[in-house]
Length: 136
Image 1 (spheres, helix red, strand yellow):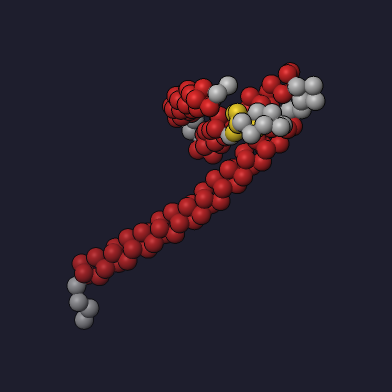
Image 2 (cartoon, rainbow, N blue to C red):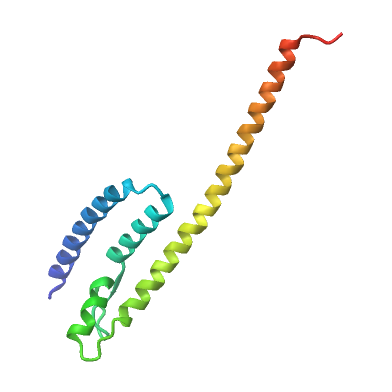
């Protein structure tokens, strides 16, 4: 495979993966639990877009999902662990980042909601004191 064919194959694959990702995003919109919905979305994105070397002695890259699936079939010493372990590492790393950001953003949202609640209570007290008028 010459470099132009290699680039063309990757462009076709990336275009198809974007279409699949968009369709998956639309399908998972119906899932009510946001954690399950987002984890399923992350899983598909990692599976589709993680590259790995196509052969142990080559620098050419291929989707890690296909390398994991096809190595045992076509290589004598092919093990699904060759690309499967890096794929699982990437998945774990991305899920950890997602959970970290979710934790940080949820904390920020909770603090903002608490501040809004306190401001509403303060405004209600001010309004009540204005309606009572001056104390004698």
